[in-house]
Amino acid sequence: MEASEETDAWGTFSQIDPDIRMIMPEEVGDPSLRQKITRTLVAYEKFRSLIKHESEWSSANLIAGYSSQLNRDQQMLHSIVHDQSFSGEKDIDGFDAALDDLYLKVDACLINGGRAVGSVSVTVHTKKSGVDVPNLRVMCMAKILRLYRNYSPTAFPQLSSPTKWQLAPGNYLMWTEDPETGEKSPMQEIPIDRDQECDIAVQ
Image (cartoon, rainbow, N blue to C red; front, top):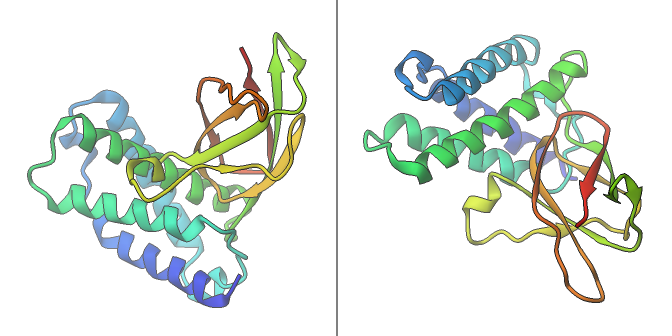
């Protein structure tokens, strides 16, 4: 990954700084969304108090997808803060998705002792009634990117089970596909902020 990509991510965080401080939890009526705002604001302030300089971010070794996800978080937050017509289910879904994704990216750094984290290792088991089901393709997509038409889901590099991949910290939608029949499992929302293992249920 070129150093310029880390620089771009640092620049995006700098763009997020003024907007996120304008978000007032007490002005949001929905209790769940208000809680997410508060959680993200607290984590973000701590993150920025620990990582203050671009040089601290340059060693993050960003995985493919990190910058595009963070850019969409920034664009959504900027739109919410500056668009006085914020309303409706689509706006709320976008705001919710951006808050979750940003929180998990920031929390990954906090879990890592305040050091920048550009990728984590994710191991997925595909299971039915608690038993591994092999030879399924695991698909994933950052939830924030699902809001935009020009992004498509990507597959883990090997069939299950398990299968392993490096992903950017964030909130993901995952599901399985049978490579022979094309049958798909229901989507599952999986938050990722550290190296972890997770299960995807197969019907």
